[in-house]
Image (cartoon, rainbow, N blue to C red; front, top):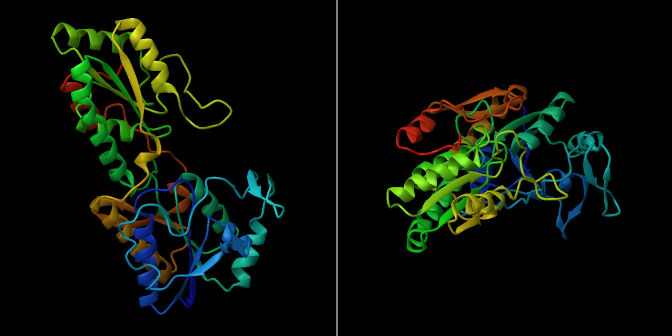
Length: 362
C-alpha cells in the first residue's frame, strides 16, 4: 500500500505509556520513509489551526520524540470532552455545544493528504475511531486505559503502573493504621470495573477488597473487621473501587457530574457507625495516572506503537492492536469496543484472595 503520511492522536484520560506509543509509532513510520503528524488534544488540532496557543498539528520527527518513553502524560495532549457524534464539542467561539464535526474531520484528513490515523485511546476514544472508520477513514487503534477494561486485549498499558502506585499507597497505610488501630478505606480508580482494586488490594495485603462486579454489604465488612479485632488484629485495610456498588444500591457519583466518586467516604462513615472504630478514607485519584510508566507498561506501549504502524503497512485498517497471550495481534476494532472486560466473579485472583481470608463484602 502506498503510504506517505500518517497522523497520531491521543484521546480520553491519560495513562502512563502514551508517550512510548507515540515514540515507537513515529520511529517505525520514519524508518518506512513516511511523514508523521501529531494531532493535539484528540481531534481538536485537526479542526483548529491553533489549540491552547500552539499549532493544532505538529510534525513528529526523531528529535521531537527523543527521550519521551519514560515520561508520563502525552506530548500531544488529550481531552475527555468532545464526542464527535452528538455530545459536546468546542465551537468556533470557544464555547461548548452539540455538533457533529465528523464530516469536517474527514474533509481535513483528505485536505492534508493524511493516508491513515493511529488512534490511541480507551473505549470511548476507540468507539469514535471506529465510527470514523465506518465513514471511510483509514484507522488503526491502540488500546489505552489504566482500567484494563478493554476487551480483545489481555492487558492495556498504564494498568500495571496504576496498580504499582496503588499497591505502594496501600502498603504505606499498614503501619499508620496499626499504630492508631484504625480502619483505612482506600478508594482507587477503575470506573465500572475492579481490576485495579483487585490486583492492588491483593498485592498490598488488604483485608477487604470491594469491586463493582461483586455488590457488597457494609454489615459483612463490619463483621470482618470485628473478627480481626477478636484476633487482636485491631486495624483493617479496605480497598474499594470507585464504581463499587452496595447490594441493592447504586454507584456513587460526584454531584452534578457523570464521574464516579464518594463511595469510599460513604463507606467509611458506615463502617465507623457499625464498628465504633476510627475510620478514615484515602482517595488516591489521579496520582494513579501520573508519573513515569513502569517497565512493563513502557515495553507494552512500544510494542503496540510499532505493531500499529505494521498494521498500516499491511493495509489492515479498522483494527486494534491487542495483547493476546505473549503476542501482539490485530483484532477488529468493532469487536474490541463492543464489550467491557469485567472481572469474572470466579477469577483466579478473586479465588486466591478468598482462600487467603480476604473479604469481598458479600
